[in-house]
Each structure stands twice: as structure tokens, then as C-alpha cells.
Length: 221
Image (cartoon, helix red, strand yellow):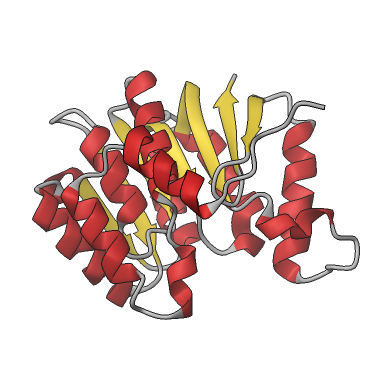
């Protein structure tokens, strides 16, 4: 059976060298995040950032949403790909991480494109919906926050993203735990249930891409 190639460290270095054009501030963000301890694993990879930026450009996105910002790498990758009048709403519960992120956005000259919302993402998303009067607000959304709320985030995004828009959901393979029947942790169960739901959801077209920890792309029908 044909399958995606296994990535050795050397091959991954090669991909970074010839397959991405990482902005200097993106590289700085990645390098600084690597020093903060175990949480560094929460940051997306350089190749995933390049992939998301390409998606944003391909669909001509101007208004984008991020649920889970961490130190700002993914938001920065997307903001750099947006046109000059593009906007990104970034939601995160941690004010300290949002401060870190904003420094990187300012260094890259894109802070004016990003509306940072600090607090529970559910509250921020509900506020967006309340102000939208039933109209979709976004062309692209990225979900990368607490896994037990992924299903709620997905449903909010379906309301907030336009028809033909794209929802990208991170960590859907969860280091392979989603296929381990012995793993009944809350995060794994939440991801497993959402994956199964999306597989049968006729509101979207889907593709699960084995990049990073697995990314599901949902195109709203």
C-alpha cells in the first residue's frame, strides 16, 4: 500500500531547507519557544506553518480565525500570508503567552493585522457570533487549543466560516493515540469522537493530512 514517507531528522532538515521559506521572525519565535520547557511541543512545525500559509493564499483568505495561539507562530505564519488589509482574530486563554506572541507579531510588522482576544475561547467565539447577525465572518479558521472543547470549537467555526472556507484542525492523530483502544484519556477520547464525527459530516469536504501531529482540513459546503 502506498503511504506517506517516514521522516528522519535528516530528511526533515532537507524539507526545511528546500521546502519552506521561513521568515526570520518565525525562526526567532520557534527558537525562543524551544527554550520554555515541555510546553514547546505545543508549537506547530515550520513545514506546517508554510503549509497553512499556502492554504491561506490559495483560497484568497482575507479574514481568518485562530483558536489557540500559544507563542504566536501559527498566527504569524498566517498573518504574513494575508494581504495588507487582511485580518486575523487570535484567541488564547493565557495572557502571558499572548504577550510573547504580540512581541513576535510586532517584530514582523503584522501586529496591526491581528486582533488578540484573551480569555476562554468559547466566550470569544460566542461574542463573534452574537455580533455577526448570522453572517459568516471568516475565510479560514485554525483550531489548536484544549482538546476536550474541540467539538464545540468545530461547531462554532462552521457558523463563523463562509461556504467554501476552510477549517484546519490540529493534533488529530495525537501521536497515534487515537487508534489505541487502551487510551481512554479525556483528550484522546475527545479527538477520537471528533474524528469519527467529521468523517461522516456531510456539511464539509475533508482531508486528513499527516503533517505535524495530523491536520484535518474541512471545506465548508
